[in-house]
Length: 278
Image 1 (cartoon, helix red, strand yellow):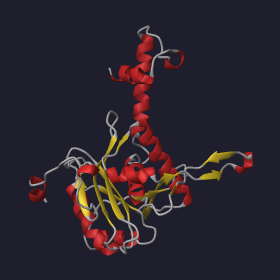
Image 2 (cartoon, one colour):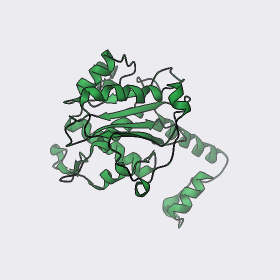
Image 3 (cartoon, helix red, strand yellow):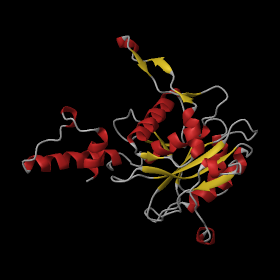
Image 4 (cartoon, helix red, strand yellow):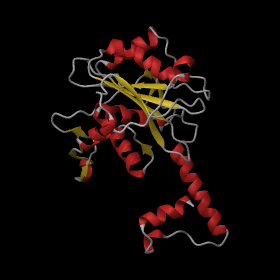
């Protein structure tokens, strides 16, 4: 592994400059940094050419840095069992000295994914698999079940979360093929909160006819799990950002400075962001 990383050459990829088919290629935008933590979101296909098996590698965000896609593997001809050793290589390549573990593997276990996860654990001894969590408990939310399980309810969660992170600039995407899938992704209108007879947009999402969403779903799973690296006691990254903003506001008020009120000012959005960065 050290020899592979030593010889690794990273080059930014623009789709217009890429002559080869990315199918079956591991695309890397950032070399592994042992001082960072990484998550691999995985969507597993059957390998018969209809959809892609995808691994989306994301560097976990901090209070001051966004989540960022650092690598991507997509292939429409690899079967679920042959996908396991590739995931093992990717995950161990993006290991971290923080917890002395390879990247956390978050595999969608519906259908073919459970076979991939089983091989990854039993044949390759992969030690860092995502634990399924149940969020409507008052106590321990972590279960003994491994992997990610997509249901209509959890699909809505990861789509809404992914869209929010993208819109806020807290998830940086480097793959032009991921962006292509975003263009084909549609929001599905549904009925929610029937008790109030209120029609709301439910971002369960669907891909346009003939289009793919495998890269998207792998990415959505990755950033959900990346933003969920806690056991109920650690402070989430976004909560820490909120606490920092509240602390900054309290400091300004104690110093006699007025509260920032962009809504009632003529300041443009770009100027506001510029002031926030100062």
